[in-house]
Image 1 (cartoon, rainbow, N blue to C red):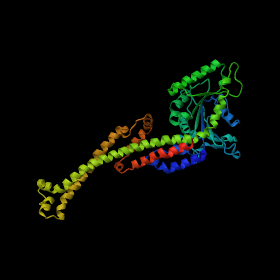
Image 2: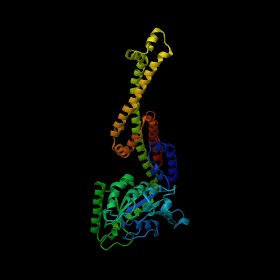
Image 3: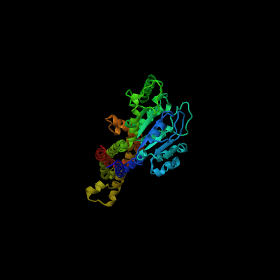
Image 4: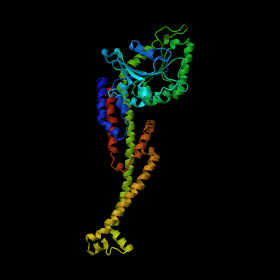
Length: 448
């Protein structure tokens, strides 16, 4: 079974098994839905002089994107091949965000300014038949440069979720000093793309004046990455140069093969597509499981409170049935004969049931008010104050998941009513666990 068939089978299984549960718990399925559409994607980001367009032209074998050290393109450009007859065709952003067969509909909510800076180019390059490359506008120093008119980082976040590979490019002169680069590496990319999907590149090393100049630039980039990631261990950084001759005094022989390695990594991105989808499903289903687990435990606690009240209420109801008439006679002087007296004297009639039934009704209403106005609100208030008490967070992974779902669980709790008594959370939880234990494992085994 090839990647496309496996992806289609996975899509069918998810729609049949998981989609109703995502709807049940108001979990957003749109990101995963988008991921299941279309073809593998490689996202290129970096400052305007980092060599993104040059790399794309090399991959395509033709001049698709304009190149230069000054900004040459301020748009998000989606580049792909869909047949020789469609080469040269361009599709505007307004069509892309309204096409349900493409994964870009979520971008529609980011505004007209973005849509006017989004388009697709169809090229004659067969290498791009089963994948697409997205070229992005160069990152800016948002402290000193003019705002774009749309939320650039929000766009990067959406595209990073879709991408099977995110290539972050630097040039030796601006080795990670751009403000938006810091935001992307520190916040945006870790939240929306796994580390295994990030590729770091310092390009244009042939423009360094000497080997010592290159070493200083590389050291600066490593230092900046350690500050941005907050980690001492630095990921592999591809050092690449243009095919043209380097400056005198710089020997690029040790790095001559890295550009080919980078290009091969990009062109093999389609092989990671199903694994990327499974990773995202794994994460989202585990988030769903934690959400369901919290609601199942809350529902169980509500039922426990109800059972405690029902036990006490049952005793009170029995007492009210037999002694309410007698108590009323002792306090108010009526009825003339209580049901208990009539029962003992063998004079029982329907008239004698009036006070017992009234007493039972009064007790039941009292306990219902106790449950709905005191016990349930108090329990809900306690759980809203400490929602973590609804789940066990025995691992770093579950604690990290909880940070993502806690606000959502709080929203579900705030809208929860006594209907939680009858909610089928445990049955739903078992379905989720079965999918993770059986179905997901089965798909992982298929791609090995």
